Image (cartoon, rainbow, N blue to C red; front, top):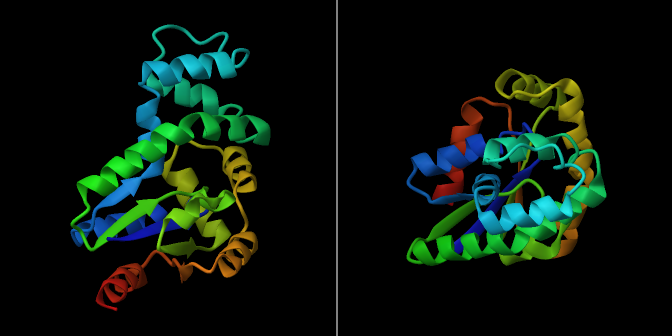
Length: 200
């Protein structure tokens, strides 16, 4: 099995490209979606309540995932230390889910994952190849503000918490791992890219 991770900044179209792969019958693992599922895990919730005691002090019981995500979004992208704490807390369970998914699809030739932040750690070295999606910053902002319940301030908080294109490219160049950069223009070129990738 060839394991490929799709990375890129918020609004660059990672999920859209992943959906195109799914339409071709390729299994895809979404790290963000799996992280959201963990917010229904009692053990994870208890750790969150302890780790971020002050931030969750006014959160009403029951602690459903939507309340937790809403509370986290208020501070996690503005505070790099707290964001790292959250990532470390979720990381073991996330990778367990990923490994289970790999086992489930072990007979597939290709397995795709989507993860925006993986280049910030050495975890990207668990993959055989990286596809780095780039897009025009103004177009990214336009799409995010149109399709998500997010302000312009929230958008730029998230952008600032992610690696820049230059930083990401430098990491990939030094890694020795095969990588492909695709500039997403949100048109038919995306479908062509996926088709060409699968036919190479």
